[in-house]
Image 1 (cartoon, rainbow, N blue to C red):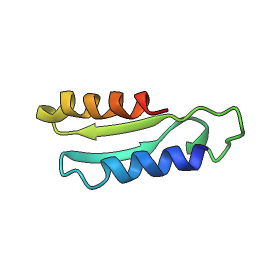
Image 2 (cartoon, rainbow, N blue to C red):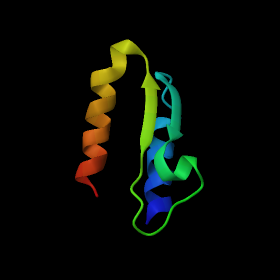
Image 3 (cartoon, rainbow, N blue to C red):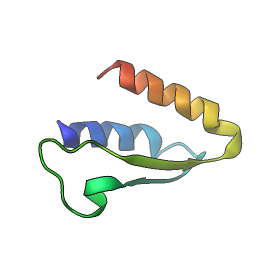
Image 4 (cartoon, helix red, strand yellow):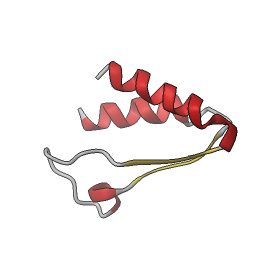
Length: 64
């Protein structure tokens, strides 16, 4: 499930020109995940696209 969620996030955000950086933090950043690990996603977007990014994120959350 974790990989599927990450693939969806990446496929959605990576092609967007206003997404400047995207990475995982938390346990994944230290190569220590298990079945209880949450997903810590960090994104840097252009200032004028913050609201659009939050809207995309909310739509993604609604599908979980």
